[in-house]
Length: 327
Figure 1 (cartoon, helix red, strand yellow):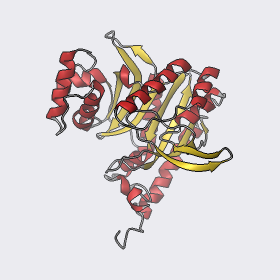
Figure 2 (figure 1 turned 90 degrees about the horizontal axis):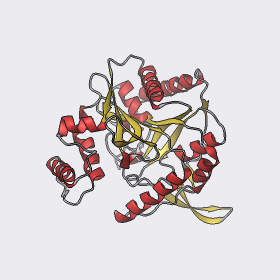
Figure 3 (figure 1 turned 90 degrees about the vertical axis):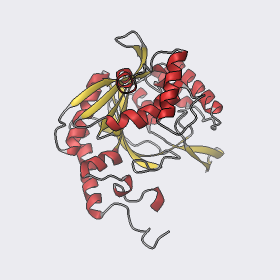
Figure 4 (figure 1 turned 120 degrees about the vertical axis):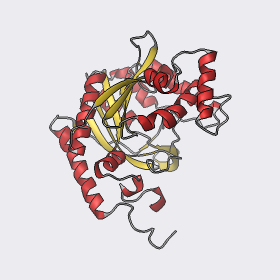
């Protein structure tokens, strides 16, 4: 630790500008009559996502010693509010993801998440674009819609949605070409994630904003699945990129309780196969879906990254008061 480590990573000028951007976000939703909510940072269940590492802690509660999870997203609690009849809601919350550190990552960060009952995916994409333009206080020069499949064919000459040995071999070869990893036993999703991160993402969001849609069905997470224009089963979700940075991840939300339970169980099997600890599935979310969550769309947006873009900052440590290294 150096003698100056007590100082914040962001300057006071940046912190004042950041506060102004947060006010702008709240005003955006206020004029649209979207209710601001607060949900717990600690919960009895964590994210089962195979590719997310949750943090947990032991707590003494009225039920005795319990294990509670720091939320990777406020998603589960917000969906329970939707099922309870909240209508459209948004939240600016602190969330936690273990093993995420770097110029664009911090273990604890601020997430903007909102849900629009009754919205189709296209309407939510337009609202996200409008919010980004509002926060940046400038129009975007272009907004481009891209199919996940088309990006891989254009930039890597391989169709990621074809499930056959030849495609898997091509994906493993491309992944090995762009990394030092031994990819000989990698799954299709592992290869696609690496290639998306190292090859395609840096090309996105240049001179405009890129929306990537129709991810592989195996990457649906908590989104619905549907048949695309080419007859392939895909995930009804999108991600938004600006200046090579992933900003937002949106879903046409899954409302089927049985399907959600099956995905939780499949996630934990996937975690077991990778040697990761299993995560307690959120049975209260399953009960809320069974009670009837309205159909609609939701999206999560990284606020610290949006602050970086708005203020021309290239390191997340300088966009927040105290990053993990200083806390």
